[in-house]
Amino acid sequence: MMINKVLTLTLNPALDKTVEIDSLETGGLNRINEGRIDAGGKGINVAKVLKNLVVDVRTTGIVAGHQGRRLLAYLDELGIESKFLEIEGETRTNLKVFDRSKSEITEFNEKGPFVSEDDLKRFDILLDRVLNDVEVFILSGSIPPGIKTDIYKKYIEKAKKRDIKTILDAEGELFRKGLEAKPYAVKPNIHELEQLFGRTYSRDEEVVEDIKKLIGGGVELVVVSMGGDGSIIANETETYRVRPFPIEVKSTVGSGDSMVAALSYSIMNNHEIEFIAKWITSAGTMTATKEGTQVCNFEDIRKNLDKVSIEKI
Ligand SMILES: Nc1ncnc2c1ncn2[C@@H]1O[C@H](COP(=O)(O)OP(=O)(O)OP(=O)(O)O)[C@@H](O)[C@H]1O
Ligand SMILES: O=P(O)(O)OC[C@@]1(O)O[C@H](CO)[C@@H](O)[C@@H]1O
Image (cartoon, rainbow, N blue to C red):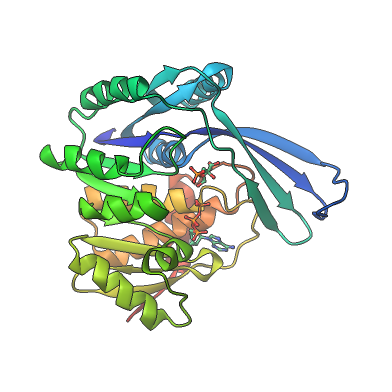
């Protein structure tokens, strides 16, 4: 049974090429053991998870050239409904190098194709159309050259006029300006929050202090992810420190996106914040156990909910 309608936006999608090597040597020759290519880009990863959760999800954004058509073919294979604007140039390829000796991923992300003003006008028209009947709109990831950093702010305002709940996962100016439109929820990682507030955290209390500022500014729900160290989740009345369970890390690419997907699922199902905390952590953590840019499924999340440790702070 399909429930609800979510739209994810990926203005700068990618083909993610993941390669595995024994031990990364900078300045030396690295022999690749094996590799894979996945459809990538944050909104696309969110859509993959939501599809696994049987949510009625659609994904939009901008693709270019042969690589873009390849990406759309991958989405088709995954059964994900996509409405992308096709422009000139080439969709990027992002290289992810998994170092087996450290179980660590090093990422090399390209800039993406140039988007002209005319392209953007055409995309605006497409977006107006695909926002119809949407309940939650997710805006995440970087933007390609040619697009201004207030784009998410504008799109959040557009969605709010239609009473659509928005989730923002972006960094730098995109995040800062997007916040001015007061999205319903945000999921920065700890580095993105540090960048926003211009400080380095040494204690959870400091993180919570800044989370409270975001909530004071009009955001309803904030999740700050911290990789293997878990996350802090808060709304106006409650704050939780959440820690994942031990796993064998295969690729953390898409972990944050899986959290965002699970967050939107919880929002649509009116889950209590305590339950949301477990749900999103189980999702993010299980995605980290999958090779390349593959994501968790419903059973992965459900089976591990009780392994998540949460503490009210
Ligand atoms: N090494 C790890 N071990 C266990 N869980 C992990 C690990 N890395 C990530 N996770 C899980 O995934 C969640 C999100 O991770 P992270 O903070 O790295 O997101 P992110 O920086 O937004 O990632 P991305 O942008 O690559 O999707 C964490 O809160 C945690 O639950
Ligand atoms: O360059 P951006 O847009 O910030 O991030 C893009 C990206 O690293 O994010 C996803 C994981 O979150 C990957 O699928 C993709 O390659």
